[in-house]
Length: 294
Image (cartoon, helix red, strand yellow):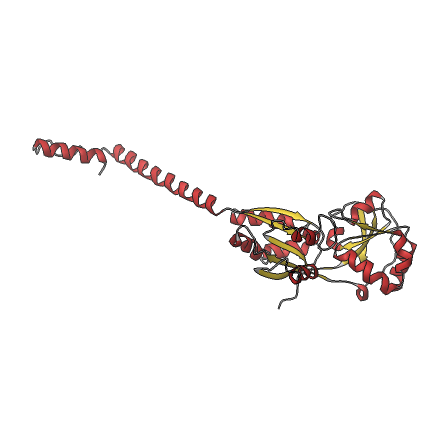
């Protein structure tokens, strides 16, 4: 019964007139309008509550990731935002090195990071140094190193150790990053091949967020070595292939939730999302492998 009818009853009671105490009957149209008004009220309330709840639980998740996952990250972030309502802000940098963009430098300098994604060795060093105490941590990818040249350049033979050695010696210049792949090339690979001193004068370390592929396109270097997923991001180059298996370096990529995350709950949601079928497919399609199931 509407407020109008209650008022009518109250008025009739005061008048003590039975004839006047009957509420006015609603016509079919009147009943329809009353019902519609009631439903509209409920709809507005539900929408308002839903909007308030969505706003209350939407957080920004700041992710610092290695360039290894730069190719797959936009898809993953977009799907996560669509699924949860949270906003993802992505920044990236090499897992090792001393440039301002390097992940280790940024973590040590206290940059606000909710989820950290980097090569496991670099993360281990941060943990050992007391710079990071992950709330949660897991391996999410395995990356391998490849060799590339500028598009249109003749492709060298890198099928075995001797062929790779010759390719490196014949190249006028050799480029590699300051990250995990470059560290391996400079400190392990060249020594294994016994050509460290010959290559060193013509080697160029590509710093920060610049990819080796960019240096190849710009003509800074003739032969480039970097993680295959990172080489795939540059359209103006040709990937010759991966390093020979006996000289290959498989880098494990780990993800961790920072104890200093603005919202531990939202950070954990993104961390968990990295193991969903959507995310693992995107990661694999970018040129890396998934870690073996434990």
